[in-house]
Amino acid sequence: MGFDPLPLLRALHEFGAQVVVIGQVAGIMHGSRELTGDLDLLWDGQAGRSDALAAGFASVSAELTDDDGVPLRCNAAAFDLPKVLFRSPGASGDCCTPALPWKDLPIADFLTRCEVARADGFEIRYLHRADLIRMRRVAGRVKDHRRADELERLSSHL
Image (tube, rainbow, N blue to C red; front, side, top):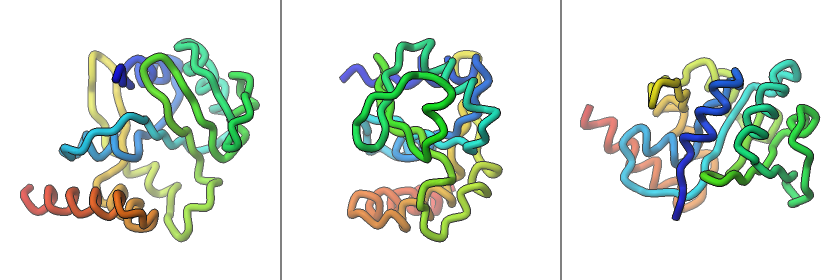
């Protein structure tokens, strides 16, 4: 309840943070009917871009933690980690980089192939359908396979 990722995505866009929506929100943007309550983001991990991320998250009063739940200050240094967990008034989730162990996935390539949607006057970048399906298959959880199957069915109707 109360899940609304748009304020955070707008803030990140306004501060120039280049993030790509992954996970089930990206699935929904591709037509999935399965709901979610979290927002997973991917960015390229380049240090020169972490100031924009910190400013965007801070502007919506996001709280950050590391993967172990240890609180982090909302500054550029927090984004030196491969993954930061966040909680804001409208959305919570993960903000990941290619430095995570993604198995054999070419995550940097995924960032270059993202889709772009416009919402309320700003752009939302999200993972390309084929890349999202591949990511789900590699993750391998039951829900990931179910969601990948749904996306493949949706692809066949295009």
